[in-house]
Image (cartoon, rainbow, N blue to C red; front, side):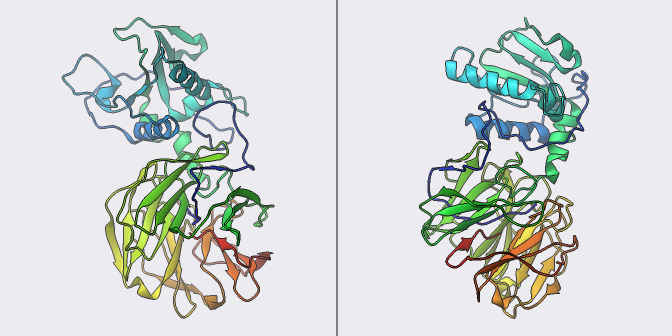
Amino acid sequence: MKRMFVALSAAVMTLAALQLPAEAAPPTPAFGPAIDRYATYVGQTTCDPDAKPGVIGFRDLLKAEYGRADLGMVRACDSGGQSEHKEGRALDYPFNAFNSGQAAEARDIINWLLATDQHGNTHALARRFGIMYMIWDHKIWKAYEASKGWQSYSGASPHTDHIHFSFSWAGARKQTTWWTAARSLSAESVNGDRYDDVLAVGPDNTMRLYPGTSSGTFGGSSEVGPGWSSSFNRIGVGDTNADGFADILATDTGGALHYWHNSGRGTFTKLANSGSGWETLEWFAVLDVNGDNRADVVGRDGGRLYWYPGEGSGKFSQRLFIGEGWATYPKFAGGDADGDGDGDLWATNTGGELWFWEGNGNGTFSSGRQVGAGWNGFGPINVLDVNGDAKADVVAVRSSDATLWRWTGQGDGTFATAAQVGSGWSGFRPAHH
């Protein structure tokens, strides 16, 4: 996974280039026609009350969209009767049937899950998540009896204050196509397609979006918003919640970390600040280090390199030391060289050499090897998959004439001969990865 740097100062930013869906549901990545079968019924057989990754990921999508904490994913082994909660593969998320706003949200999320997709797949997203059944407001929908639609439910709880979601084991373990197919989507695509985009701040402090294309070039730009001052000194873009749309992170000069959620419908929404104590970092990149589809941060503090594992929705775990000797690599970038799902690193040194470190998927990297030279004439490198072939490319501005250049990735950390893909970049600050 690859990530971009950009600056953001408005609480809500509009992206005119995006298509807006009619309903207030989480954004949906683009999928091909292949899809999961309907989940069969498999009730609780053991007790393992640890929330499973697919359930956590689904919860994070709902929380990012609606902003409320869940009502529980697990249940104690000695509590009540049989329940998938006791295996960590069920979720209760609050939707109050007697609150008009939350009732409308409940209808939106249900319609989103049960809609037929563009390929004619019925109940498409429920199948892609591996949802086994849902209970809401005296009714139950069963994947294993999907043709019957919603059926009457008369259990002990009417489920008027929450929707209950139970998952198949494949869905609970992130083995369904929402997670496996979405991995091939670009984590730096602002509009959710397979082509990574460039974001750049112009001389007027207005940020613009340049959409990537299949030819490895960029389409006409659209304005994202003004107010891109230098108060945000370290800015990054990455998919923090595995929904296929790039979110925005920024540190300010006081060391606070800020997070803006990409709704996938044309807006970034400023959420709560994500932490403090980031002022010591001299440079950072945003990339998926461990292949869990959630953006991580790799930062340089002096000559030492640290990994901040992503927890979803702009939150990060305590940093882990992963290397030293990085003072000679003042600026670096992260991306996925070969499409294996975990991030790799590139950096230029003070002599203009380009170096590559392959990620091992666990926060460590292989020994560095030189993959290029002559980079002193270019600004900071940006690593992104411009043409959607799942191989990281490099984009940089040549300082002498303000032209934009692209080096197509070969899948092994090396790049093809440079090609010019733009001009007139004087005074622009391209998004850094």
